[in-house]
Length: 276
Image (cartoon, rainbow, N blue to C red; front, top):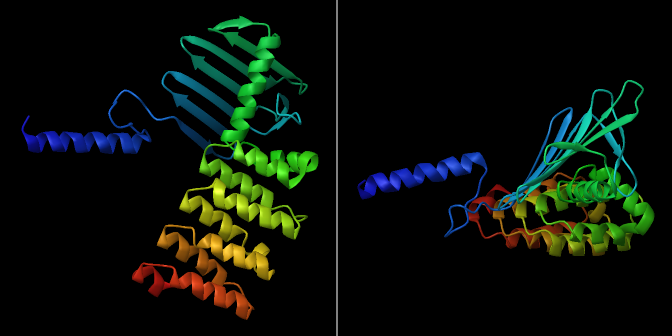
């Protein structure tokens, strides 16, 4: 194979992996980067995670309600189901939960493909995997945030977000928290500080800021922190998109307009600056 064909073959491989959603770590083509995939349709939520032969998967069809500590499922809508699966070093566990005709949940538990009673070890496995999926896959984020707010307040929700690894799931939790209408000024300031340190993705950070613009513009101190956080977005495009949302608001104060002009000056791209 000549050098041109070799480069073309490599390029095709890169396209294949990109289209497949797989990411190859440099120096080891057999090692696939750990990834989290969550897809939603009208009736299905699915979370998957895999890393070097260890695979975990949670799928919910229909609507499921969980116990308060998310250690188990409490109810599933008619014709729905919950399925938990894990494969590790040749050992597998699987739990399937479906409602019967009376609405009572029927649990079927399998170890290495063989049906087993759901014993104490099995229940611990279910609790650990379900909580991991709820956290890292942002499953039922609105419900979980409400529960934590009731139990431990805003501080508890921010501590929960700190345990989440992916920016996408963190963003969903931040958005769920900011939907709460009872947040105080000090709570909102804490959220901005956490958002600064917790999310590195420009896209996810910008999306939280765009959704919550009304919460932060009414207070001069909060608006100052809000614009300072916008300036931490590296992408000129995402900065501009966030500032566009601000500009679409009516009756902006002179202080907010001045802060926005400062943010405009921080955009390095002439194209994005001109568009704004």
